[in-house]
Image (cartoon, rainbow, N blue to C red; front, side, top):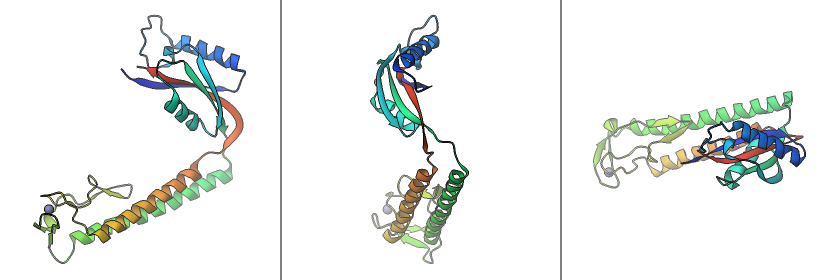
Length: 213
Ligand SMILES: [Zn+2]
């Protein structure tokens, strides 16, 4: 048996009002032959505790509930601010951040692809595994690297020796790929920051918690 988070959002109101409305919502969610484990607020009866955190987003309030609420307890009510209406300036900022991220992503994944292609297309047709000393024909090595979002991946190994699974790319090549991956992670963090909605001054409450399922 597990648990699922179920919540409701209410505009700011006196706590007694919030409690009454949430109690109604809980009983409304409860079918007549209720036996528990619905994974919904039908498993709750009331608000156990208010946390007037005034988080900058509903997501933050959700994380707080996810991290702190315990299954079988009554609900937590956590305050947050509704997002401000997006302005033309916000939209432009977000579009610019997206374009910047896309450019880095393309640059990083092209660079990684080139490094790996260079390995497969090297003049010397054979490569010797540093670990098991096997002489391997480059063109027959399995699985040219797959890409996802600019990351080269294959169980953490870029090009593996088929016999002992040791990495065959040089340390220099790997460092260059790693530098690209780090650069991309930084660009992603910057993009996500720019893409966040700004909170308004309008307060609301996220009410709920882990419900047995
Ligand atoms: Zn090997």
